[in-house]
Each structure stands twice: as structure tokens, then as C-alpha cells.
Image (cartoon, rainbow, N blue to C red; front, side, top):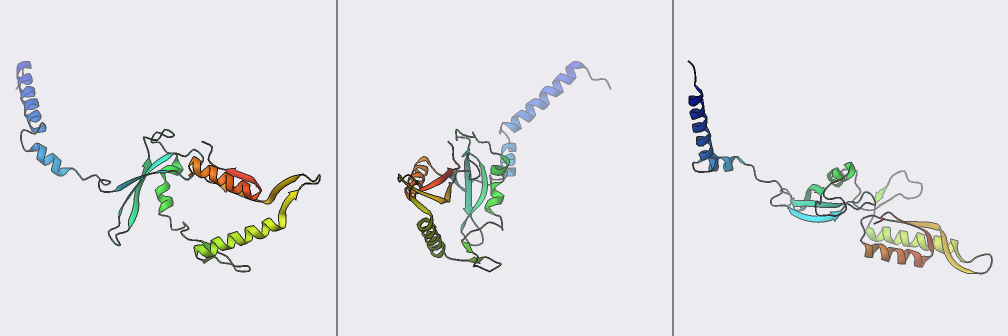
Length: 196
């Protein structure tokens, strides 16, 4: 059976018209399509803007959290680049893109650990114990190694045996306060990871 050009055009036009009527929602095709669409998985999640903690670039990230079905506590379920951030415009490096794995890693420390002298294992300690121990050891080291005057008798007030490393997740204000506090102790070895 031979199909003429005119017959082909008529059948094509009728098929296009029928599918357009269904696709535009004049029939129940729109309802069927809407029923088959899965709900967006981040629809009920809480969105929080943050800064990637890995390097000095300080890329913006969006952290999505939702209540866990088991215990009702908020749990991070997704992390992506922040497209409104002027630093990264929504892009992330491989480390930043994989930061959800860092959040849920079983190897991630969630509380302070202390290894007693002579012991071969770390033990969990309280935050108060950790902060008191750090303050005590820092005070002992500063008292022992503080240099008030150099060889020529000039006042220098230096503490050369200890250094301080700041992080990239701090704001400018936190970085400024960190600088002031660390310099007030006499520490010269101050390095801040953030360079923006």
C-alpha cells in the first residue's frame, strides 16, 4: 500500500494535535504525569549556609538537614555548593563535594581524646578537662620559654616555643580577634589558613 504525501501529512498532523492536547493538560494526561513525579528529596529539609572547612579559599556551601526517622534529631542529608557565593559560584572541589562523607565518617572525632603518658590508647575526656589541660600546658611552656628582653636589653616580649594555626572557616572579625589574642600572649609563629 502506497502512502501519498498528503496522507502522511494528515496522519502526522492528527498525531501531533492529539499528543499536544494530552500534554497541555486538556485530558487526564497531566494528572497522570504529575502523579508519577517523585517528591523532591530536599523539600522538607532545612537549608543552612556555611563555609567549606578544607582550605583557604572559603567556598560557600549549602548544608541540608532533616529530622532522623529513628530518634528525631536533625541529621545532615546533603551538602552542595552555594551558587550565590561570590567565591565559588556553586562549584566545589572534590574534597568539598565529598564533605558529606566527612560528616558521617565513623573515624571523625566528636569529642576530646587524651592519651595518658605511657599509655598506648586514647581515652575520651570532657571538654572542661581538655581546655584546662591545654591552658595548664600553655602556661607552663610560656613561663619557661618567654623572652622579655633580647641580648641588647630591648623589650621584645616573645614566646617562641609555641605556634598557632587559625582556620579558614572564620569570619574577618573572628580572624582579627584571633590575631589580637594570640599576639597578646607573645606568640610570633601565627599562621592563618584564610587568605581572603
